[in-house]
Image 1: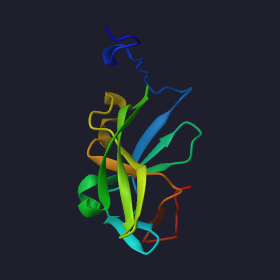
Image 2 (image 1 turned 60 degrees about the horizontal axis):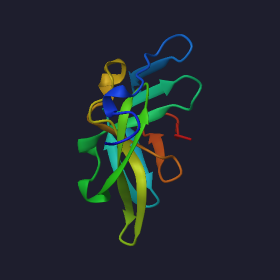
Image 3 (image 1 turned 30 degrees about the vertical axis):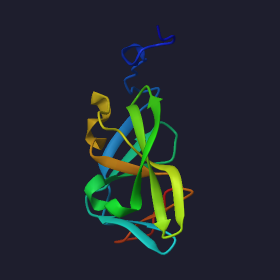
Length: 138
């Protein structure tokens, strides 16, 4: 018999005044690049602001070049958002960065808007607003 908590036993937390989470449309076209590779350009990005953490841009999955994403079995759990699944990111023909793209297939209800979107670790990509001043994810 397996030991430890089952998936259904995981703690689910609801954003509140002590740990707020807001999701809003990005204020313009967002471009994601990895070196010289354009990973995505979209007018439909979301910005998730969680508590005091830096904002995270969530990009519609269909805006990302499918040939740039690789499969991964890696998962993590966030009590506010749910189970995160990962992809590797191919930044050029010879470079694969494992588990640097994450997504929530079935995010918790409080953040359901991020379903169908992916986010990137900021050490691998630059994210900027094309229209207006650059606003890079850090």
